[in-house]
Length: 491
Image (cartoon, rainbow, N blue to C red):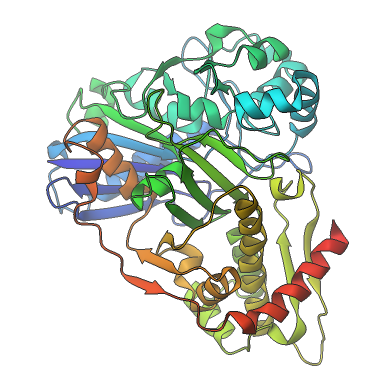
């Protein structure tokens, strides 16, 4: 029995087909090969067209089929992972009304801050576990004020994964996990937040039917099944934001377990069993994929917008005709500390760890006589690793004390320089696994379809590729302290 996982990333769509019996990946596919652009009509804005996601999803599935490594008719369930915090608005005909305001868009910060002040800081934190910030609810408030002609046509609002599930099945659902990442969920009362809905003046009818994460969210329609060579009525049985899903893919489900990822943005994600929150909302708490009213499982999420995108920007500007392995090898030629060159990688909008300030990216102490292209490559990757250290210190203030961090061997975790800087700057070992978000979504589909008897069974064959332990933490201390001092000047 086969499982199909779909990962709706900012850069591209990835799909995986997994054998449920062995939990081995049969094939993966990505579409498009080049990065999907982000539309930025004004400074701090970030949008993508949901219909583009849908077209790319179909192309990625057909690309996977073209491998001829499996029979598409053997796929029994579908799972979806997606970029978090986005806003998709559709009308009664299930047509998107505007481009999605995605996760790194900063325009709604003032709306969230005003809601935080009006509802009350203590009340928001104890009930929502977050400030409304620039999350989905605040983005909808922006649409309501600035685009009333759009708002009046909205039948349902949803997260990106809900939209793709709708396109596959014609059914619109959501979950407490999804609503919590939009800061719509009241954890104390275990219900849609009346405070948020009342403050912003949102109608209850805008919110789709609320279901568990691991359950049926609709069945594949006849027309779509025919177009994609799949079996009609197979269910979508799992939907989760990319970071909770990344944690799932690494079998990070129980209190004390911690995952990390370093794609376009960088994340450390730890699971706890209490309704915890950061007093300044610099890190965020959401319902994990296995959170229920009877079992508290809260994902504490540190998100840094300017991580992988800083690395990709540097490559695009300085080595557009080269590969990432070339960049990584160049960086390895330079000593720890990049001979005094420091990079603050925060050029991708407002950063929550800085109380939603936008400080931009900075290159410090660049010496034209000493520093080369390779120095810049290394300084960027070290700066990204140091931003993780900065964020992890905030997580430690809030009770997250990882003894090991699990990560997929992908993106920046393919770079020896980055891994060394990450492990030694944080002084925490890292276990690397051969998984990605689409594989996690496929395994989630198996859990939701009861193909696996429980969550544990889905990971019986999961083994780490390697364990990387700190070897020279002291060597990174001076470099981090210099980086930290430069950061304080910007704050």
